[in-house]
Image (cartoon, rainbow, N blue to C red):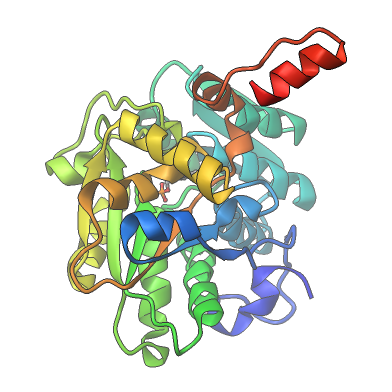
Length: 344
Ligand SMILES: *Cc1c(COP(=O)(O)O)cnc(C)c1O
């Protein structure tokens, strides 16, 4: 049995016999983070979504969106993307043998994501504009042509992504209730999806987890209460000024008694390095916004157990890692030199 449609079919809008395009996504680790727990003063768990087939949570939504597109007879899909949606759409479209076009902000996406999209054979379009402009254009494109839109405005994306909430509940079990979920917020599809997953599981939960959303300070429309015309942050996956599911995100936050806050790029990078060097988990900068948010804004009163969603793998963005990580020690090929280099 492979993939989350097979596993959660009874809770997803797919019938027995519908086509399933899967790369065996989901079932990602939920890892206890010792060092982070100590620093936060509560139990901190990491939902490692970088362990999905293309290295981000987007695969959960994409297996559903592309399977749905194939079921409906589409022979092409399109998306606007800050990178990971493009990588995922490209991979699932290759698997489905359908055409994929991705529109990305030119020069503003991490190299690993671009490498994936081109390798999977997508038509990669570098837009001289930002994500918000790209999304507006693909919405118009799919209104006027028989091409399936696989951004998170597509309800099947939310359906697939809600399964991460099911997995967290299963992994923690009834004796370890989850008090809060910390998550980076860009276009706000993922926080919407988690809340849907938790809401659908309300019968298994004593209390609902607080949804703690975090945006980058330079791209924080939901914190500011208005769209940001020129969003700017090194966390390129959440460089979004006008989130498509902003209202739903805010209502999830309100219903759950959570909060939305922002973190600076510097705070994001500090959390990014801390996770990699202390808990052994390498995520991409945008993902570290969830951890930075807890470090900077503190864990809310009464929260004993929190899950941080690490949305994407660190290898997606090797350039940022090489810029902020430790340097490389040059060394002559002699034992004494190696000894000096190893022990400093
Ligand atoms: C897409 C993405 C996000 C933001 O998710 P939204 O659903 O747009 O809020 C965060 N982190 C990474 C790594 C992503 O790829």
